Length: 215
Image 1 (spheres, rainbow, N blue to C red):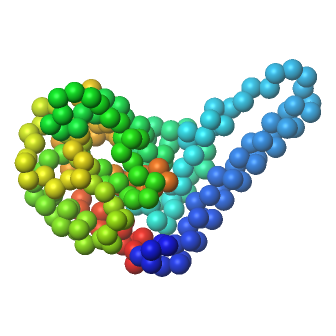
Image 2 (image 1 turned 135 degrees about the vertical axis):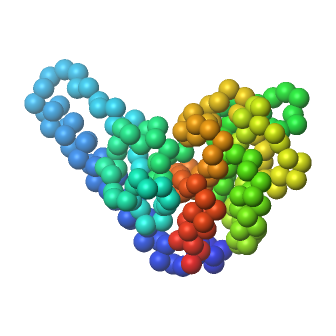
Image 3 (image 1 turned 180 degrees about the vertical axis):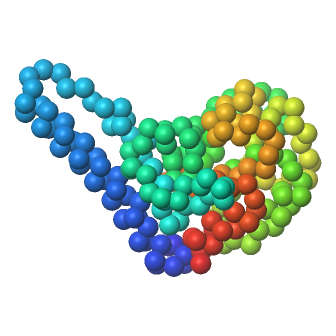
């Protein structure tokens, strides 16, 4: 927004996404306080306090295009969102990713995610969808996105791939962590704050997500 690409109204999404999480954390800490005033000894901290399940599902600026897409708000601390990789969840890490063409050396998703750009993470080497996707990404404001493709070790790689980053998922961590079971065209848009902004199966879904940001 500071570059003038989004409407000032997008600032409203901060309270929309964060206040439910803050409210639930205050409730949890209050509950712990009450227990400690009544009990002498150890009070077990619930697993929700590790914050891995923090999510903003149901936010007006996250998007999924599947029939069972998250349409309503979930609890700000949610066990399912620790690993489900849905829109609004924390983006999972994945290791043992080899840059295409590299003889040795690995990287990870957290190493390529940017705090100043959206990362458009594509699974599958589908040529038709790939071309239309990158045509759309080029139409977005300069410097707002970077693109990456994650391929299976046996997937063919096209020399005309237009991704900024090409990675080979040597041990399948990315495919399993993002629940991509086959070579179906799947796109995850990772926000600069590390949350999944979109989980879609079509170029139109990517367009819908960015329309919510840059309208």
